[in-house]
Length: 199
Image (cartoon, rainbow, N blue to C red; front, side, top):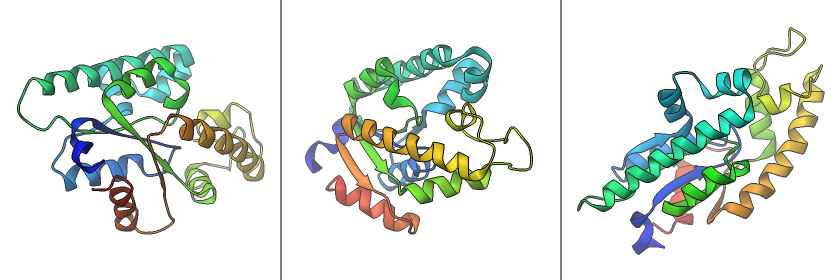
């Protein structure tokens, strides 16, 4: 892959808190490439956060906004093809990109899909640390957990387990490269990505 790695964008996918943005920025910095976060692009394009779009207007509206952000990245990639500079850049996709077929097809047209496979307990712990269990309904949980109205951390973790298993299978199906992330330093995981990409 080494000779072709910079001919396409590097697109990181994976479950929330797997390190997509952190590692994406580190890889981009390492090779002096531009970095984009699709959630940030959605906020810029729509004027409100992805979570607000989902909550106020529903899943379909969010998926449309996500697709539009991906289309802008595709257009940016095409514009780079007309210049002698590096064509590659790095993208962190939202956690639900694997269920947005229209957006995914756009990304696959110009990018290499890299699945950062988190350890389940690590991802769950990070999500639970952000949640507020002092109220019912529990606050600050991802929508896919909150929608099922868990009443305790135990219930939230059970919901997450089912979700994690399903999503992992989806990510593996769409990925060109799979990197098993470790509960280790950012630098160790960055090196695992570089090794997987054979850079």
